[in-house]
Image (tube, rainbow, N blue to C red; front, side):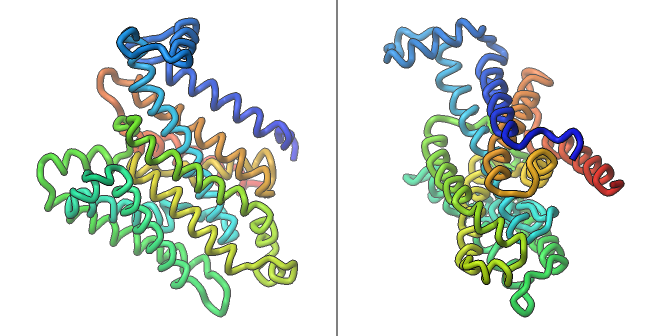
Length: 343
């Protein structure tokens, strides 16, 4: 394809972009930190400087911005890779965690945990209880849609998407009911969380989310070759020796883990899983060995960039991250549909 970036350059380019946006996220804000000062702060931290000797800028970088940047990068990576996995599993570029109800299922169970079982969401398990609740909701929604859309051994994409619409509607209704029954404090938490935000990122929440997201990404990267075979069709992949049903279960596990943890700690953030794999395919083609790592890097960079705009656009207020990604992602996706459909 004319104008396509060489596939071998895609991942290094996205990595450079991710590092650039991450550094900007550490430096920019109400308290600005220069590059030289950032280097000095990181050097002092690596040298185990006592916390009492750290200045205001160092504490802002260490306790506020670093966990936010780490959580944002891995959340964006997880959502983008989850979208790529679903698109590969269903062999349809419209499959996305938010469109097929996976994100909504995770959101519903997380909302129920916040309102109905606060001891689970904020008790001794901390963020882990909320992550487990969201993971359970994502898992149930995914298995339900897989079962609903399967006819004579084949997944019917039309049934899948219509089922996703129904699951989304039910989940939105359930989340609305949870909001109606919530206390004022719970309602504030639900309001901020339902629009998507990285503002609540702390080292405590990051210590729960980051290992789970890394495990989910590891599971996803191990599915690259089987997903390439599935692009030929389930029967053909089976003839090539691919354990199709086992691969499907692993895809479901990876997607639910990535989406559940992301929704639990960052709220509902749409269009990342739908748009990023499309952009990556324009440069690398459909092969998952390049698609999955490049999607992870570009998804992390996109979400960190959106979070940076959300923090800096209307200070001291912070724009809802999920709203911002929708405002940016929907026009880009419509443009992609227009340009790709015109060929």
